[in-house]
Image (cartoon, rainbow, N blue to C red):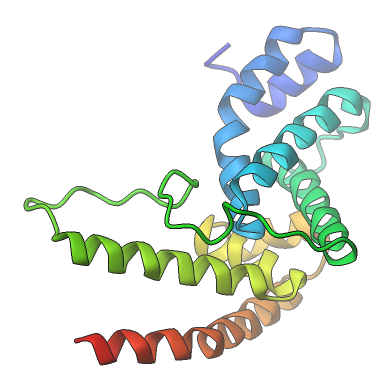
Length: 198
């Protein structure tokens, strides 16, 4: 199974091969969870939305058409479910005890280990910085948040994002540019505080 492409696995699953579905989940569970986490800034909700994404793939397998890549189709499902969750949270605001915490087990990017261990103060500042960025990204309007997360955090190309969002590439570029400006503006107060500490 490991030598099969995601497209091949999805076609096998459409024909009833549940092992092919398990392989798709194994390959894409962590990337989809990390993507949703970056959109929501809530680890528990990200796990729920990622699970819902794969439930949708399982229950709507017949809807898959090999027009775009499998990963674009999968990310579109995850993106749409995440947007639904954002809308639901706006209607029913709740406070998560985990949101914005300094926990590093949240799907944030891994960095290479340094030769020498940073001081406890430096580790705390790094955690605060990452948490501030996550909070600022999560506060962006969803259309800009999605574009920023896919481009700057997931490393997708403008073409891939356009396929996922089903919009022109020029629209994606515009959203990324505007989202970056908004993010920079929202991070300015934090960056000012960081400068004062040094």
